[in-house]
Image (cartoon, rainbow, N blue to C red; front, top):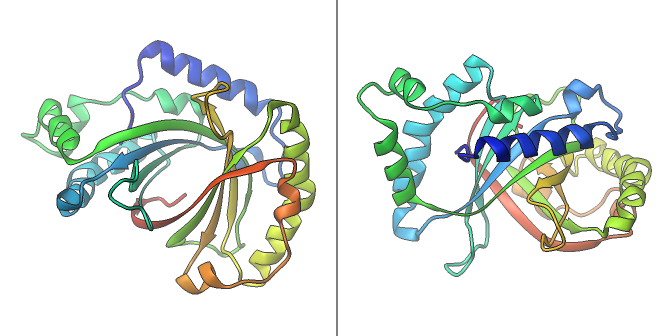
Length: 259
């Protein structure tokens, strides 16, 4: 679900992303690679899981479909985080995708909700949403690089997510290594059936020394066989100098327009 940023916060997000876009390098046209995402890390109690998933599917999905139709949103995804116990900070992720950084400030409210769900008011919808889940944290990020098979149409079911803690002084070298070393290895893995695509995002909000990671990589996998299938070129050298902060496995449980 879209975070309700203040106007000042939205302008800050847009400025930071605009600045980052000046230095993005990749092997695809800019309008394809340079997308922006909001991530909501949600905590859902076990007894509320069915209700939460129903709320995302029956109430929020049609609203997000209208946002896509109007051009304010490019994609919407709901993921379940595997192996998260009851003491985990979050167990579901909502990922919103935008083609332009200006679209992240796209406003919607009662008019759109009433258009999609006549008789359901924003206050009631938001209260039901708050009752179904808690947002543990939220982030905005910009994509720096991507790989996709030429004929890829449907989004992958699983995503192997790596959170990377890179020192500020090493960021330029890290991004250079990713483009020159890791991406060819990841492309080899993709060509040999070890993955079905890959993205690298840089976190832009929140920022600062207190943030435990600055980059997030997504390796897309179509089946559990790909998750456990070893082999292909080793891409790990391309991620030096850096430190792996955390790895997670996400399962896509709902989506509109994929990644």
